[in-house]
Length: 146
Image (cartoon, rainbow, N blue to C red; front, side):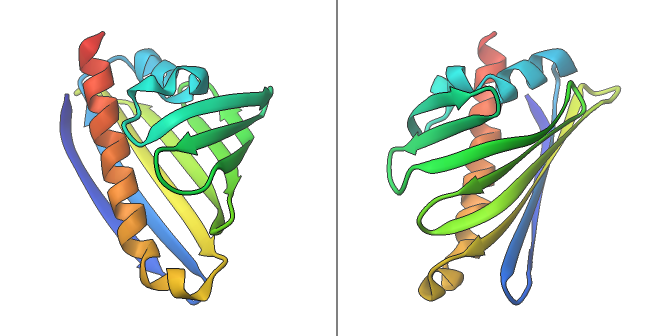
């Protein structure tokens, strides 16, 4: 399971940046496999499903909210995974860093988001924190099952 996790959020004029770190008592190859296997995202409690469009593009269908399109921009196996994301409410970039440690696997995720609708700026900070915390919690449960 997770040894620790924490979130930090910085709010710029136009962009919101949210960062979360977590350590899992699990092999880095297993963590990488679960996180990057988009077609197997059934462990995500916030999604109805995903659709692979091509090698570097996919869609996420949330239980609530708009469909989000993703374009993978960087793949360094067991090290770094990055993508651009966009839906009707926001556009942004996600970076996932994976590091093998003595305790297991450390992950650090950073999301940089620009909201498209002015009123959403009030909610983006809380949304990103909740979303990242849920992702880590769901991932922890998925890794414990295996």
